[in-house]
Amino acid sequence: MIVVDASVWVRSLVDDGSLGDAARRVLADDLRWTAPAHAPIEALGTVRRYETSGLLTTAQAQSIADEVLAAEVDYVGPDRWLLASGWRYRHSLSGYDAPYVVIAEAAGSRSSPSINGWRAPPRPPACR
Image (cartoon, rainbow, N blue to C red; front, side, top):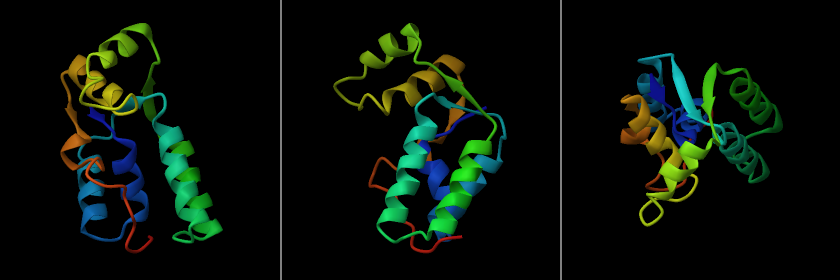
């Protein structure tokens, strides 16, 4: 199972460069994905931002949104255990990022943060 980070997910859908290739390789390693319940909201928000800034056409944004909506992902939360566990990370992670770490810890799984977008907001150099 892979705990899929929303920024990695979006990068895999929009980026034709080396970071997009890396994201697609990692996500293709295991098609059993799990994520916090807010992950598709984050993903669609990023796609919207790319469309409104002109980085994606309306048709490209709609196609990517359709892929996000159709993805087979097991969503977790916002259950009390997830919220309480995420609170432990309040000094080092945002309230949006902590659930990804908590879910990976709880599942004992391999997860996507090794190539996450936490370093900088993803900006596609070219769109697929």
